[in-house]
Image (tube, rainbow, N blue to C red):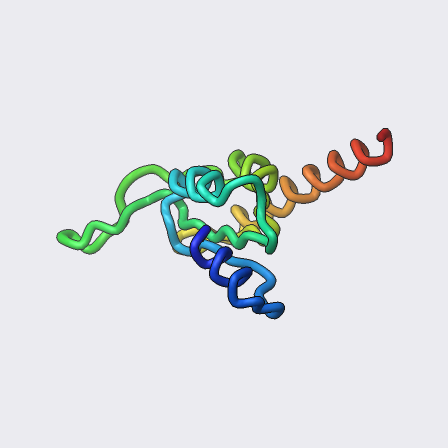
Length: 115
């Protein structure tokens, strides 16, 4: 992600609005965002999968699902501006993410009003 962002800045591409990661284990998201430094010049897109893993031998999903909404606040603090889900993330998960994003934005707005 950092390479894509740096290349966009270097090339002067004004059309890049975000760089991101899709269909990845949720465990990778926070380290990836942290690896990009102090924050984005552009937004970050974060669309992880459910945390389960595809077993190519048995052709089925294995492992535990993750509650992505528990991580979303950390991702937003690190610059994520577009948050959703990919494989095995369903409508209820997206609704929970939406609620987390709304709560985060309310808290940010309240903090800025006090300053």
